[in-house]
Length: 347
Image (cartoon, rainbow, N blue to C red):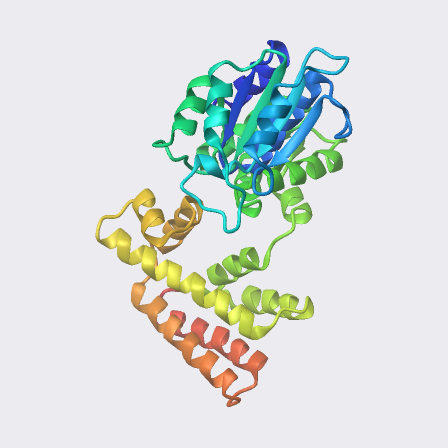
């Protein structure tokens, strides 16, 4: 990951005439935007030397015309090109017909007095197109693709190095889980933690638990662990908290079913030799979720999980058909699961 080096070059070196910011990580896209705007000293969108085009409703003719205009009382003009779908195989219904050959010709000899930045929020471009080939030949490419767990962890550690506070290892692990490896969410919550911890040297797991909000999915991940470990008291307490917060039992059942389904799928794929990356690709879910599932299922009895899954399906049917009161049925399910685990000698 070279994003920090790319940002440093923007700050310290002369800007190039053309940049391609390629990738889906919005936080990193915004970092690049901010640094380039600072460099050219653009304070607001009303600046006469700045214009931004959304290519889903603007034409390439307008972009090139603006790029070829000399700066007004300044050294450089800045042009942002958002959503340049014509670099991909994507088609826009009722979209403007884009004359990409005009842009190809401009990119062969771009003006030094204009900085044009293409923000392409895509995983990949259509490499067969002339415009894509020419842009990649001309532009400085800044990679802002979504980061994997290792890269997000490194980004967090690098950020902490420049802050007057540290974070203990267990706190980091929990923080990454609760922010879903989402950089935008991570940095927003980190600022909150740093503000809270100004009077102390280290952020602990306790502060993360108290200050970083849990989504329903996070709470149900914890509930799944409580249920599978036979901790009925914690599972029921968490269930009651969720009901008080306005969550529906049927919704809780549905997410819990998806959690158990993921555990069963992960266990099956592990048994036939699949690794984390293969499981993530097969199930079409984030590798970090797979990692957590793999940790959970290593010592699980697959037959027990299958039985619990079937019990939840049956319970869901009984609730929806009015055969049983929904909150009572869930409480009985948790208690019954504890008895099953105890009889099997698992707890």
